[in-house]
Image (cartoon, rainbow over all chains, first blue to last red; front, side, top):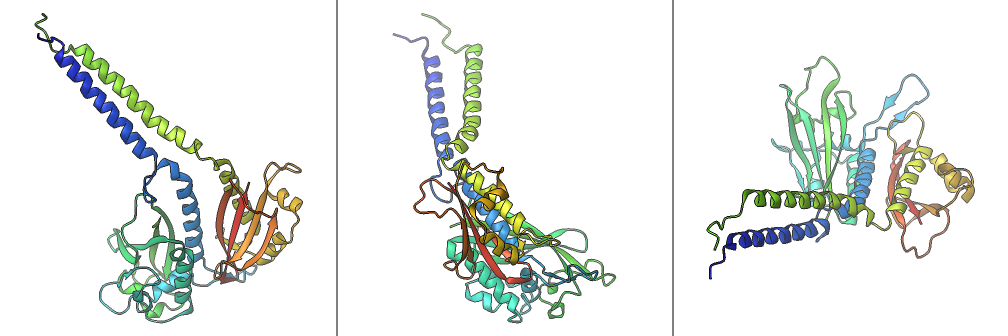
Length: 211
Length: 150
């Protein structure tokens, strides 16, 4: 006997398989299978991490102001800027610190063991590493022809799907304390020559994810 | 016997429309269902809001970073009674949830600087937010502000 509707039944079977696959994909997307899976279900966790990482970066880029009530406001260098000023004077290429602040590369990556540099280490270890949080810190700067390029400052590896990114813009001036140590300034240009105290504008981008 | 076994075009179009409808529902229901299934979402949102209020309260005037605080205000906060604390972030007299705010030192998270609000024991379903603040006059003094709502 010849079934005249064979092709129709085959088409229906194919569609049924397709529907079942869609259901499977939906379930996999909806449920975080591993801690590193990005999913709408763990959005609250990612929000909390974003707030926390934002706080850490805010503190690292905080420049204490003195004489608040007087006309002459003076600024002190932030912890992160101070570390960048003393960073990477040893070689021709910027010595990226692999493995985070507790790695052996960290201690040898600065030209001077300033208090601020040590403070950066303590903050990164206490805020992230003791809590099982990995992080990358990248520095974006402007070149003379207006393009934006990246320097890798501290790297923990390739971020997972649920990583979050926070960023802050900081200004580098030739009048910043310790500027003469010429750390990061070995690799980035003075945007306007010597016509103003502004040296370059840096965007600090911190990528954070749970391990 | 029919000599025309091929599916007709309108049948295929019908199936395509049906599949499009199914994919649309799957796509939107994923975003609609997931946040609601978080049991502690209400408390979590409350904790996040209260932590913002606390940071605004502690913030040092004239400093542009929201995390830079005045430690005198921090001490005032920790000395508050429960009523004064609730007046910071809720309508006068209204209290539909319990709050505990604990401040610890960042360098040693086991050292509690102080706590205010209702003491917490074994909490089942609570919202929790952890914020970092810094003494505006001394960036080496960093504190952890823990907000729990249940």
